[in-house]
Image (cartoon, rainbow over all chains, first blue to last red; front, side):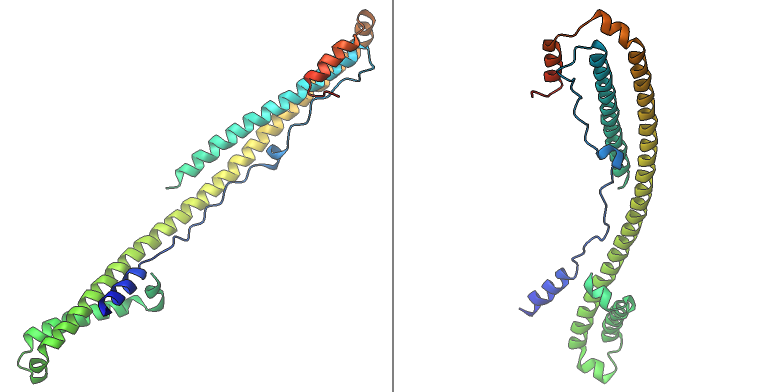
Length: 87
Length: 142
């Protein structure tokens, strides 16, 4: 009985917790904005210029979202590489 | 190991040394009456002290190895955090440059549309069906 208590105490004394805390990397705020909805054309218009103007704006929005998505991919790849370097 | 936080390391080295000294004394100092009389109990106590001391010296060594590992990991984490922040800064600058480029292209395209607006409006009148199709494709079904 005494031996069991002694052994238990010795075993419990070996319990350790590793105090190294790793924080999840923060993504830039610029990437954390949702892509806006595509613009729609005024249904009453018959002007081709208005249509083309809206299409140009929407192309621009698409390009911005494309750049953001590419940036997210780059962010993930880079941060994962940095994360994996810690061993 | 909690016990190592309570007691300084030298205590365990002393216990080990005392245990070893006790074992040695029980064999060497047989001519001393006290040792001769209590030889067996001395050997038992010294044996337990040696075993405990050895265990704790091993634990101290293990603990020190873990502390070194923790320190190394903390250093690596700090470096990784700095690298991460640096990568974010670079990414944000790259993103800003690309957005600036997109804005410039957009402004140019809008200007060109404005310049030819009158002429293209004169040659083409867009039917409402076309606008409805485009608006639906843009995700607005209103």
